[in-house]
Image (cartoon, rainbow, N blue to C red):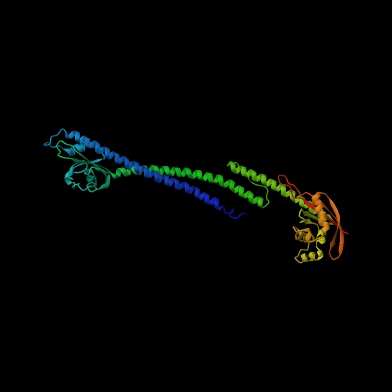
Length: 393
């Protein structure tokens, strides 16, 4: 089992990050839309106040031409009639800040407006929009004032100020915010459904692939890898199935080869040793163990001290002592080395007599023949191997 696979840390982190990024993106989008809506509504109200100022100032100029300087003009009545049923407040003042007309309040009860910020900007010829609390109406308004010259009964310039209650703007803002909130909530629900569906579509095939890998690791070859989509995962599943099939066939073939070789080695009375091209021992039978070890009986007796009572188990353990070791470590014979080199160079059977010096000097007839190991379909050739048979004297 690879470290971390059982916990699926990366996948769980992805399951959290993907919805979180989507929610944060939608949240940022809703904030941007809310800010845009506020700017649009505020700009629209400012444009409306500016246009209203222009309209009423021009209307007063046209009306004032019908009056002489000595005539009285009911400006307050004219303004009230002109802005009848309009939510916009209209105030007319002279340059000293005295209120002449107002359609929302009585002019006699109103304070001097000379210090009002919108009044100051209008007198200076730089009109601007001001949002502040109205002491007369006792609620906040947005103001805009312009300076103009009506003529007629008026001597000098006047200031025309329009204003709209902030509650009207806030109602529009709240309406826009509700629409944005509902739209964002709808997108969150739809995105959540899509994300859950996509996560399930990824998690299920991945879990099946991981389970199949664990089964292969445990030498279980009946894999549950029925995956149709996504297409990439389906291809991976098919590749794993093919790989598992090939591995199973190769393992079975290798086991069969090893069993056959072991049976051949075990039935021989003579010493049989399988070598690679570097004269390293790959395998050997029981008589070869005694031949290779000058004190073979003692080696067998030492292994029995470990509780290995079975002869076959003792032989398997002893044989491991010789595996992957050079033949010349146990049998130092120049003649044997010559026979082996000739067999390797020619690729043909070679025979000869060697002298081995153990407790007593003995001559053995031996032969070396090359042979190929198992070759599995879809793999490279196994390196050349050599069979050394030493006949008992």
